[in-house]
Figure 1 (cartoon, rainbow, N blue to C red):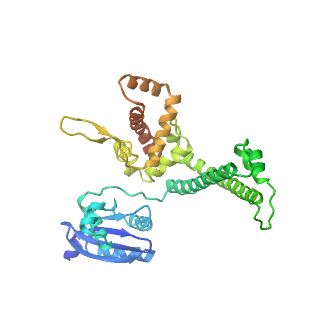
Figure 2 (figure 1 turned 45 degrees about the vertical axis):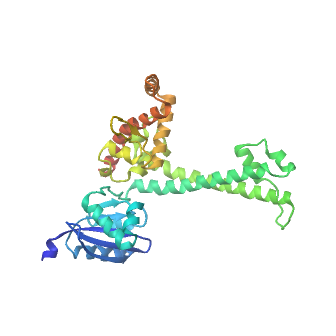
Figure 3 (figure 1 turned 180 degrees about the horizontal axis):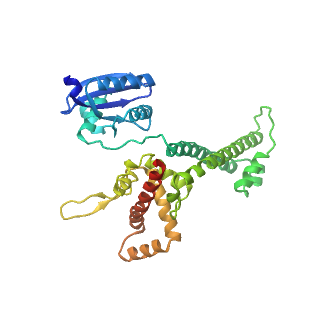
Length: 351
């Protein structure tokens, strides 16, 4: 009876094949810890084990966006309050050591004390679909860029009779010329024939990746436009920028309880760096850097096309601010518009 009335907090250290869970009471005293398989049956057993120690108030989980995603979805479906826990810093690990039970207990105590208070993404709505498609597109874009770099490098060092015909070509014309190079399938040690075969192979790979990117964009762009019409309507926001901001925010709007929280999430909130009589702020190098890049893209677009932004830039320049400082201020102002639009779009999705 006492155990059933007791309030407990769980902590979970997630891995690919197993999850290690720990339980602490309201004073932080460790009650128990145990390891469970990272399967559907293991999730069920883990929750039953937690509830056997008392009433579960919250559970702190490491890695809800990676190894702990499946467990987080299951616990959310069972109405368990989840807290995103960052891994302990290096100083803490040097002093207290590193093991699965230690990490699980640290996660439970961080959730209990409020040191960890982030809300995990639900990963059950259209934003998760956008994120997965963006992962595939990003990989294809990086692979195509690497292939193009290889192609240009081979052309620069190719034998003269090949290099003279390809040096003046760019873009699609260069890719087409390389794919039409005649090659001999028989093995040969001739550098010219080997270079022709290599250029043909890489150019064909570029064409395949371009087709893949186009197909992914045909899937991705309509979903982004339907999910976030207000965000897409903002000046400087295109499908790629909107998709990144949606992926950063997640499906659940309760994570964005204020524009300041979104600014910290995107690394656009200045960090206090004052001491004594010195009162200043420094650049925030944390947060989601991809989201920060999206804000930077919006700022550059508005600096070129928005009269209000250009007037603001001129005024701040006369006050002695550099261009970097002005863009940093612009990012913080852009966050206000993005936060309002995101909340409206995500609220429309939930209703």
